[in-house]
Image 1 (cartoon, rainbow, N blue to C red):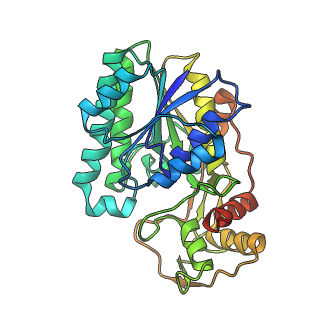
Image 2 (cartoon, rainbow, N blue to C red):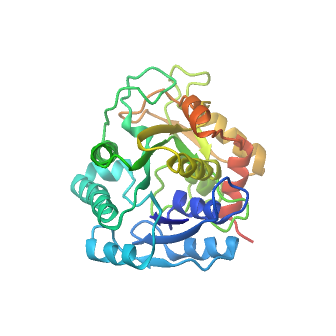
Length: 336
């Protein structure tokens, strides 16, 4: 089968491309077509995928908001399934640039649906987020928790989910899977691809790595007075390779089911900021100087998933450890 991967040069997209092209998964032989506009990624990831897999897959530099360009890609390839990663993804930036986020994330999804209808493609896996859940839900978060975002990025994911649900309701033979990620970290064990944010990182692990490399004087820990075991915020971190494998399981599901279905992809275990720092120092032997500052507005004490539905229905369970996450992140940041 042929899978169109939008945003395939991004962090999660590139790792998923590797898993799609790798042997050992329970799907038929897979070819991929990758599209990315490099607005928050670059061609090094495409080179890394090819280096790891030895595959010279077709790649298009295009913006999904350009429907004519998208239509030509669909016309050139017999697409069986789409994995839709493409989109803007920084929470803080979305607050400052709401129009850009709604334009990019919604219109790219709308155009994909148009192209699917025209070209008879019936399977789509959507890169959603745990930010779709309201902050006052009880933990762990299940897929039927109340939705409601606190920023334009999260709202754009909710709106895209609704767009896809509505299309699946009309197109009864469509199979749409909404994958709600928790906190991806880590990298491919080769170090050839990894998380390489532009500018100031938005996530904890890149800050830890950059601090260990001496790029920052210290890591800022925002608050140590939360109601958690060590007072620092607790989140559900999942290795990006495990996350990528979750997309393979979603393809299996799409091949056998129709309708629109949501799944959490997480470990079900909360890890505190200090626990992550200590694991990184233990695993890599590198010091991570850190200071505690005041809480950030909007942060909550604890957020972690219930992975039970994904395990029961998709047969997916995260396997990599916290040490794996730390070791692989460091290796990708220090390629030999």
